[in-house]
Length: 240
Image 1 (tube, rainbow, N blue to C red):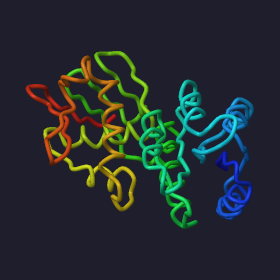
Image 2: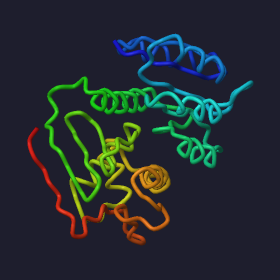
Image 3: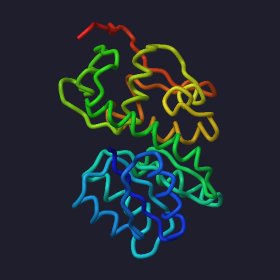
Image 4: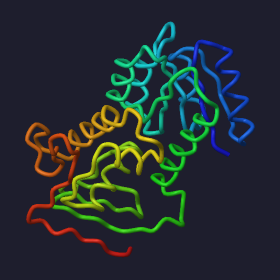
C-alpha cells in the first residue's frame, strides 16, 4: 500500500482528496501547513506528496525547497489558475507536476498513478521492466539499477528527470519536441508542455553538464525541441 501525504490549508480539499485516494486503496496522511508536512515526512514513510502552494506559516514553495534537500519522492503541486508564475517556481525548486484547482478527481488519480509508477520503478521495486544500459560520452544510465553516472560519479535525478533523460538517451541526436516529451513521460495530453519540460531540462543540464550555459550533450534546437547529442561518442545498449 502506497502512502500519500496531502498538504493543503483548506480542510475541505484535504477531505475530498482523502476520499478519492482511499477509494483507490491508497493510505493517506494530512497536513495543513508546510511545516506540518515536513514533520510528517520525518516520521512516516511517504511515497508521494500533494502540496498546495498558498498556505500559512510555510507555503508550498518553501516546503518544497526544504523537502528536496532530503527526499526524492514525487511531489505534485496544487495550484490556482492565477498562480502560473508559482507553478514555474515550484517546478524550479523540484516539483514533478502540478494540478490546477478546481481539479477533476479522475485527473488527480491519473497523475498520482503516473508519478507513483515512475517513482517505484526508479526505486527498483518493479521487476518486469525491460532493462538496458545506455551510454553517451561520459553519461551512463543503468536502467536495471535505475542509476545515472557522469564520468563515473553517480548523480541524483528526480523520477521525472530520470525518465526525460532516459527518453533522450533512447533517441540520440533526434530532436524531440516538448509536447512529445510530455506525452511520453507524463502519459498525458501536452497542455502547458513547453514551460514544464523546459524547467526539467534545465535541471538535468545543471546535473550532467560541466557548464550548463555551453552544454556538451543536452542541446536546444530553436523552435523545435531538445536532443541529446552523441557527437563522436558511441551509444551502447546491452541487456543486463
